[in-house]
Amino acid sequence: MVAQNIAFGVLAAATSLAAIRVVTTRNVVHAALYLVVVLASVGALYILLTAEFVAAVQILVYVGAIVVLLLFGVMLTKATLGEDDQLDNDQRWLGAVIALFLLGTLSFVLVDAFGDDKLPSLEGVSRATLEAQRGSGAVGDAIFSTFLVPFEVVSVLLLAALVGAIVLARRD
Amino acid sequence: MLLNQFLLLGAVLFCTGVYGVLARRNAVLVLMSIELILNAVNINLLAFGAMHGEAAAVASQVFALFVITVAAAEVGVGLAIVLLIYRNRTSVDLDQVDLMRG
Image (cartoon, rainbow over all chains, first blue to last red; front, side):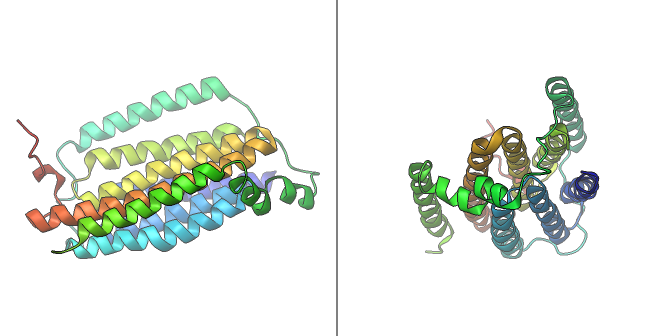
């Protein structure tokens, strides 16, 4: 339990600091690289929550594909490499006030509603049981039985997005 | 571990993303902030799933996978739109995209 809490503390600190750097840094490429840190530590948090398949997909899809796509976007739009003071607009203080207000409200509501609720301890549960109940196999079974229709709909959505992106970005 | 640890981290990520969407001028950076928001949602989903037994744990993982898929689709189309804006105005400054201003 202690080890889990230490791991959570380290990952939470890395996630929040890197996330704040993503939205405050003056270098577009650095923002994308800080985003890698955020996404990888969120993936590690998924492992803490016993969701190892989602963690693997997080690394593959987010760090492997989406960040590369964003870097391509940075490159193709010829963003200024290096420091650029024009990345933030004039409403940044208003934005900070709104975000802090939102954070205050959310924290108040969460602490009020969930207080000291503990995640069920998995100590003593055998690894095989855990694997059978919520491991990758169980997730695969659920996708191809209970969630078969949503799964197919999502694949059509991906196809539509792919075609749409090609149509939009094509030079003609 | 407390449930609230994860929920509060999700709230921090979400609000950071909201700040990024409001304060950034470069369209690609706005897309990055949207990714932060979607990740916050996923942390919440998986935390609640771990809270409520094995059926919820599996369902939350499937939901998180769907969110990741939709995020990938969103980034693809979003970047195509950003490229189109760049091609038409040679800039991705969102403050200059004000055709709808009366």
